[in-house]
Image (cartoon, rainbow, N blue to C red; front, side):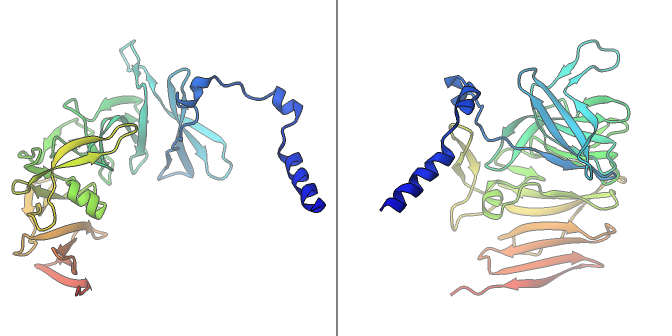
Length: 329
């Protein structure tokens, strides 16, 4: 019994704070419990594509200043400040100030940075943001669009264009000329949406962005979700404190599901081609991707019972082969 008592006293002696520790402890007001001091923080780290560097956001809540810093992989030393949210545009004495920006991405050639700010939740895992393009060489910043928030802003492989979703439609912007091309026109809530998975696909398959540039940057494949025959269902959107309930086209078991079509848009010639997905509209399109030279598009389709997964690819004509089959009893 004495041995146990001795061990217990020894343990307490190790964890008990010293007088110096008590004297020098950090003094925090009671408000720190709920004002965010102890909140979990996410560190967004992005790799630069053409150098041995990585970058992350450094924030100072007191000065309301945020920086994107680049560091060397090998040494960990600071190389450069690639972006500062206190920006003065040439010819304008008033700085553009981002009170907060959530994320950023480098273009494939690292010449531009996509800045994402003021994010609003769409569904459980998808958002739309006020997006800007920072030119690291010209040292200027421009909004992606002045007409609402954007989703899934994505650089083309040559870094000269971006594609994005705005109000359920797909747009392509030339970053050299600032020209914006609206690829689709009939996108509308609970009717049709382009390039973004609807709540059923997001919750059921974990999908979000449903458009993809070809490797050569000449084409872009995207999905169209026809929700016109899908019943409206209240879906819970979980936020930081209180959840919201919004009405979306979301089918229950056995009800009509969204009809999905896949298109390929030729950016140079502005030609739109509809892909052959078979004669059965009662199926799921769970993904698509390009081959390495951009000549072939691969599409995944899954039957309604989710027992047969096939991949189709286009050579001279569309051919589908079963890659997974599961029988249910």
